[in-house]
Length: 408
Ligand code: HCA
Ligand code: CU
Image (tube, rainbow, N blue to C red; front, top):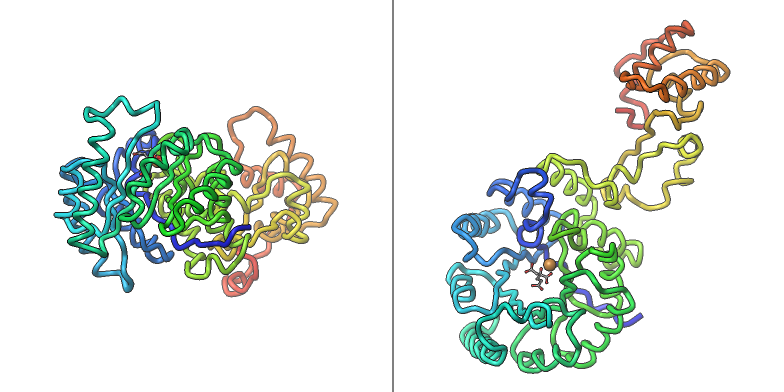
């Protein structure tokens, strides 16, 4: 493993995340100002200090929201928070971002053969303009943060990237190497980052991985191991198409790699943060998000039986540390008699022996697989309990609250 140089995450939920198709699927289209504040507050609490915003030139709302958020952050943050504007290499983008008081620019340029046709100016003219702008800014504001990234870096020949980066190497803080189209693999990432580290040892490197191949998380881990300084993330990995790296998924993986890497973050905020986004989008936390209750939900009989006896059998990862502090066994046609026995005794408060539970389990599974509309497992079990004349005991409220497991 190379030396780990990792400094921080750059949250882009309000920029890349706002480009997610989920905002269209949920007919939300954009985050409201209040929701943006909620998102930022949660992320600051988690320990994130860098936030990327749309260049305020995109529309009036982005501009006025940014100004309110900037003030809001001042009122809640106890440490320095960096607000970065995602800008094209264009006069109007840069000028507006400077005027509004951003702490830095995340400049991006497309040069790959798939996108270079979109510019009206020649590449030579654009580079000349960029160099002039960047050196001017740095002369006037030496602490102003500047990142320069080349879009679609993993489909752009390395030497072509170098030709451009060589120009900006003395002037910028960070080089961005985004996998815009999600084509990279961990091996490509490792090699690419190593070459970049060797050629540009004095700047920070930032990566941004799209999840088109489902490799965003694997690529992110590899990039951090190979020595990058910053990684772009969003809550749930929200972003264009299938999104980017989820902040909670990468924190979870870094924790598994080496706990020290997550020391400065309040990782127990991870799950509540995912749930918060769910309440904004009116959706469940995605089933493939590692920091989710789905990842603590057990369905098959053998799994439920094992979890009831020893949860570690199917719960290997320390999700509790990330705020997932309960688990669920869902009753259904795949449940075994153990889960049904447990449910009848511990949740239904019935007096029941193992043999009766086995008989009830058999009937329950039959009922659940019949193609009838009524499939509420709890109602079916109540009905069966009645049929078997099970006695219900009443447990005093205080006693119930003293139970160790959370049965809510
Ligand atoms: C975009 C593309 C981008 C930019 C990343 C960057 C990408 O939506 O404008 O500025 O480094 O994936 O390349 O998100
Ligand atoms: Cu992107």
